[in-house]
Image 1 (tube, rainbow, N blue to C red):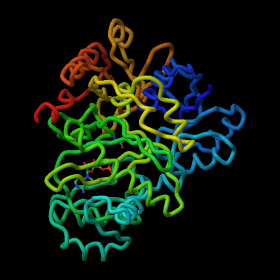
Image 2: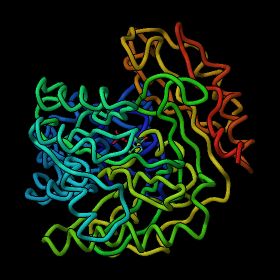
Image 3: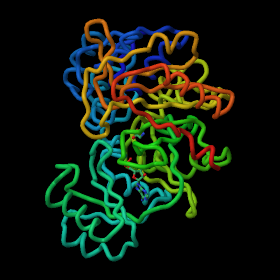
Image 4: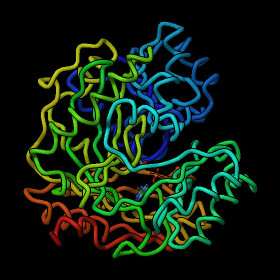
Length: 423
Ligand code: AMP
Ligand code: GLY
């Protein structure tokens, strides 16, 4: 069985690693992949956003399955383009991917489906947005409608900050087309958690809960990043909440989309806030989360491919996924300066030694091979994951492996899973 994985980050290396262990022993291709996927798959020199290029390759190579990692190709309609050529794709069609691609659309669907979420109002003109601002308490959240690589959400502590955010999006177009429409949204307090649900158009199977660490420094200080680590399970998602999330968040959205003629197949990722106002949805993503995937996939026991196939065929059911009881922790090792400017091409030392005699997994996030040496090629460089009998053990194992890996300027958070430990 030939499988194409689209993307080149830690999520895609984790997918390649997980799929490579399925009993059918698939032959993997990764576009564009990285130095880590190169050990498991043939890397293809095609960018994840180059849908025509990917389609041209797939029309000749005819992979049995394509698994799409990032949101951009999904929002560009890769699933539709592949399906039109009779190619099987795990990932939502363009219309369904709008759950991530347009925050206005996602809100509209949530409202119609009765899914709990923060009160918000949509605007495309500055004057109207500024006039509505006093109707929201501080802090207030300003969101660009479209894809903004995780930067399109501003939590304004003061009215001045909120006004500046509105102007920067609607007048100065700092997010380009993504910010021609915005949402003003009430701020929700609480603890965040991520739920990745497999969806087949009608049924949903929830993968174990996880929690991301968005801020760059310990104690949740400093600017937001793509995610500095994750762990699973997240105790804030108590076991009794999982069926509630399925029945009041995931399935109502899938049904509302179906009512609109949109069949959702793939991963529906709910970013949740759990706090004084109960359970609320902050956002949806149309794909596996990164770095949540690096923490969640190692907890899936047995085969994964049949579950992905069942999503495409509409035959998903709970028996297709088995979860290991162990907890997992993922620590991101980032390049010096990240999430600001950082250097690329920095040699990474200790990878072989770190993995020897260890059951940790070192997923490459931003790496390349240069003259036989693994070097950095991105801001998030490695995602080091370990399993453990409990979360403390998993975290300790992951940091034990991190300590053996060295590259100039490397930094990482030392408090992954702190919320779980401070409960
Ligand atoms: P996103 O870029 O869409 O992943 O959202 C970024 C982050 O903004 C979320 O993970 C939350 O930490 C925060 N956020 C978004 N909406 C709200 C809200 N209504 N209240 C509080 N925090 C929010
Ligand atoms: N970890 C957040 C995301 O994948 O969007």
